[in-house]
Length: 78
Image (cartoon, rainbow, N blue to C red):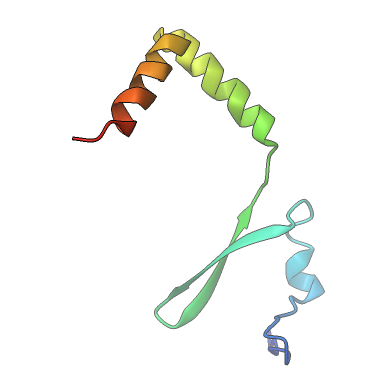
């Protein structure tokens, strides 16, 4: 399908394409072999990621003290 770039460098996707991604508002864009590749991205709340991270840390036995020590180590200057 033919798509035109506007004067503001925007592309409009045809309804036939957009209807195939009803719950998607964001796409990751990259260029490969002079082609624009759009990959659908589902955004999720940051809180959901934090819950998963905290659960994994608990399962691994990582404590807040371990995190504090790791930050201290990473910030030290040799």
